[in-house]
Image (cartoon, rainbow, N blue to C red):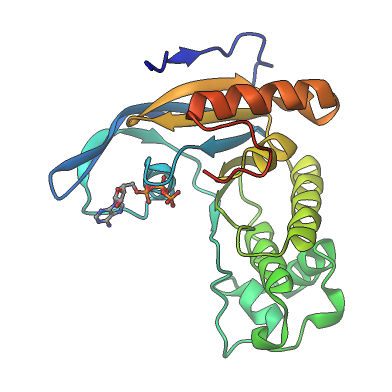
Length: 248
Ligand SMILES: Nc1ncnc2c1ncn2[C@@H]1O[C@H](COP(=O)(O)OP(=O)(O)OP(=O)(O)O)[C@@H](O)[C@H]1O
């Protein structure tokens, strides 16, 4: 069955553009993975990036983060200087305390770090070693490390996918709350359609190396019927069945 590419983004609130990706092409060993991806993200906008495994989501995120030096490709990327990246694992330094991980590379940021740790509800664990924290707590430290840099853009590559379901929901709420207060733009890679609909203002899907779907979904959070409708539509676009627990 032919997948009809569809771009529908009318009715979007007008926001200042903070990320602009144009005609992004990336190749690995001569194999072209991205064929010309266009993507914009507005100030304070939360965009979830969906796509099947191997579709190139992380490749896009790494390109925007500036982490793919030397990779074969072309295209232009405009991106704010103050940006931070969250990965699936927290990437904390085991020989530094929690607060020292948060201030890493910043001079005199201890007070800001303590505030950021309070925002992620870890004010009581500031001086312990990372290995004494649970997976969810370690991800909260990573989030605090990101916040203390006051980013205009947060790039997140499946940051909650290794967490148990309850911790994951708690982290999603925490992230949404922080994003509402601080208003960074967010690009959030996930496999999980429900996670995308819980968090994002907009969903972009990568299929066959291009952005094939781009839709406002913010109202899904308040309207269960709209949530279900969008979930069915997105799963259909991805060519998978409408099982709410289906992982791509
Ligand atoms: N450094 C690399 N060297 C060779 N091939 C790579 C490299 N990075 C990515 N690829 C290939 O590019 C394609 C896209 O990979 P990418 O990690 O961006 O996909 P993804 O959509 O994030 O997948 P997943 O959801 O499974 O994490 C895959 O086929 C992958 O094997």
